Image 1: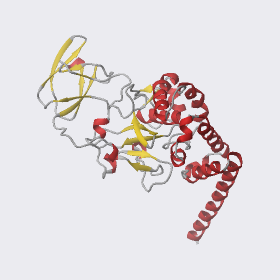
Image 2: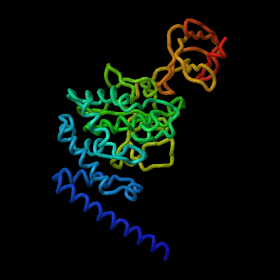
Image 3: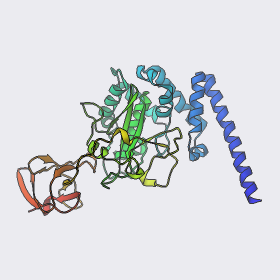
Image 4: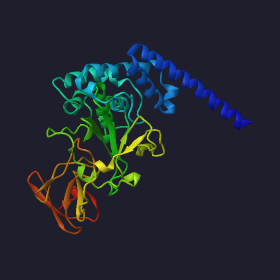
Length: 353
């Protein structure tokens, strides 16, 4: 009896949901034409169950209206293939972040930033260069959660790689630039996870670090070496891109690793290069003291450590062996330490001789 009741309520829920989908599709088609109806159906059918139960039709309609407005307004958005626009511009979220109307917030700001841009690459570069200073959000491990929404990160003025990536994806989408989250749950050498952004242009996907603008263009970043050693057939060491459309796989979210609601695409093959020997490579972070802040110091007179808003996993790399002397220079003063064993080493300036 109980099983029959569960089946009945499941059927009833499907019936109600199906009716809501059709109602939303018809309204969108009346307002935006055939493509509007297609976009509405795609959006509704890809929604996670939790969103079906919590989001209003007004929220969904506003998201749809603003996405289609951007498609008409910006030259690059008009040229984006329909399937890419639907999957990587239209959705109101990337992962499991708090749902909010970020299009209304980002659109006027990004419209100004992309003046003069002639392609999705130029627009994405302009946004990455300007938006984080404009909203005053930068990398800081003092954030409350890794998967913060834009409003949550702006309130704190802090975010880490995933929160920054969500901001950049949303800002790009607000002006019709196809963008999606990319990342790995665990680097090949077990040195933690990382998240960044992919941008679509001219039939191909390119990558960039969020709040890591590089004037030389896309497909550059401190993590390219690590990404080139990803392992395609091991999900935790592979590189994934987010998707709205169901793919049969899921994007691994390390803060909620059992959550399989976000579809994912394994894109490891685009990052992996011919494997080079990593034997002897050690990664270094330099701190002023334990529990203190990272500082920029020169190691062996050649490589500088990272600090400030640089990602915590953005580290200086040196080919050295455990037990070898390492010279650390700060403000003209040099101290020496023997390289500890391990692939990742934290050095504390006040403890160096």
